[in-house]
Length: 216
Ligand SMILES: *[C@@H]1O[C@H](CO)[C@@H](O)[C@H](O)[C@H]1NC(C)=O
Ligand SMILES: *[C@@H]1O[C@H](CO)[C@@H](O)[C@H](O)[C@H]1NC(C)=O
Image (cartoon, rainbow, N blue to C red):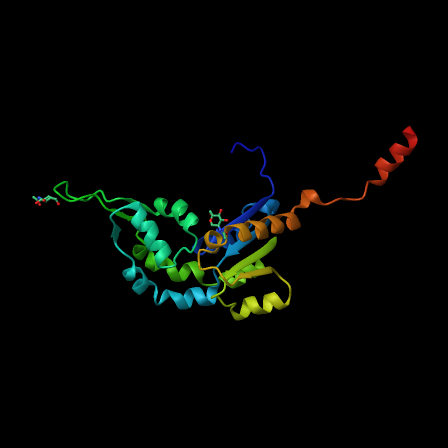
């Protein structure tokens, strides 16, 4: 962006992305430019429990789709994404035309852009220690969960100690920011306002007051 210095930042990540922003916030690599970070629908305990059924979940997904609209329809019918408008916007970027298709009589199909199953060796490492990192990182913290997720013990204790802001959207599925786009935006904007240091109104400095008095 060619910024000479970084402005105040809010980091936001969903699911695995939540683990990534938490790791970045905890590492302190962005110094005190990070005003806060928000994690959408991922909790260490339930993420690690869910890993066991991940491969079988991936097997239930269609391997390809005859068209983008059929892919969008699959996402909404399976309730993977519950907001049709959101699915129309985000699903096309998840897919690409199958390049391996023989040119013969067959029509082109759309396949997943990312081979999630191939990333299995890293799954455990992404989520282990996430709750501790989340609580230890500096800056404001927001955890936004869909109805199905539960806090693990560390997060529950942290919540009781008021270490972060918790927001639960019971009507949303895992793609919480797509299912409830407006509510998510409102919570994030509010979180930003609460952590924005530039909005702090500081009392005037004594020196300035004296100068004002002298010139008066
Ligand atoms: C190609 O597809 C058309 C229409 O589906 C079909 O009638 C035809 O028999 C197919 N040709 C071959 C070689 O498969
Ligand atoms: C559904 O998604 C669209 C696009 O993301 C968004 O504008 C709309 O507000 C969403 N609906 C709800 C109920 O959040």
